[in-house]
Length: 112
Length: 112
Image (cartoon, rainbow over all chains, first blue to last red; front, side, top):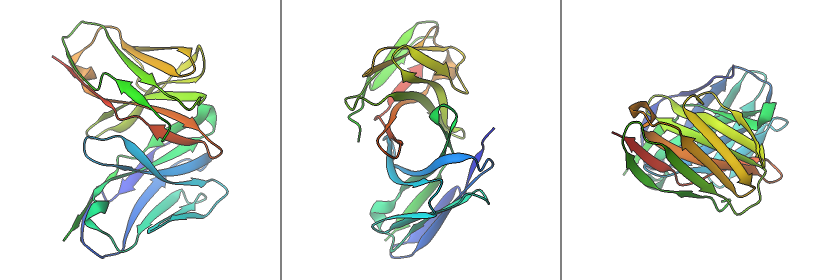
C-alpha cells in the first residue's frame, strides 16, 4: 500500500526566504507526482505535476524535483511572499486505476 | 480548472437520514473521484469512476455508494448518515495529456 509522508507538518518563515518542502513515498512504481496548494476552506489547486520519467518541473517561483528511486520529491519556493501562505499537499498517482495517494500536507505561513 | 461544481456546498443533516452530494464537470473527463478530508487523515479516496456506470471502491467506501449515469455527473450517497461522516467532501476529475487531477470547491457536511 502506497504511503506518502510530508515533512515538516508546519513551517513559518519570514518574507523573502527561500524554502523547501519535502515529500516521500514508499512505492516507487508511480505514474506521476503532483503538488497542490490548499487555502483555508477552499479546494485544491494543482501547482506542478512531474511525470515519472521527469526529474523536475518549474513554474514561476516554484520548482519541484522527483527522485523516484529514492521515493522523494521536494517543492522549492523562491523568495517567499505572504500570499504563499497555505497548505501544500503532495500526491502520487499509481498506475492501477489512476488513484492518487495524498500526504497530510505542510502548512506554510510566510510572515511580514 | 476543469469546471467542477459541487452541490450543496454546505449541509446539516441528522443521523440516519440519506444524503446525496452531486458533482458536475464540464470538461468531459473520463475519471471522477470522491474524497473526504479530515484533520489528521488528509484526503482519502471514497469511490471513483472510470466511465459511465463504471465505478469502484476507494479506501474508505463503507457507508457510501456512488452512481454515474452521465459523463458529467457523479453522485455520492450516504445511505444512512452517521456522525463519523461529518467531513469535507471533495470531487475531482482527471484528464488532459498529463492526467492532472482537478478539484471542486468541496461540500461541508455536518451530521448531528
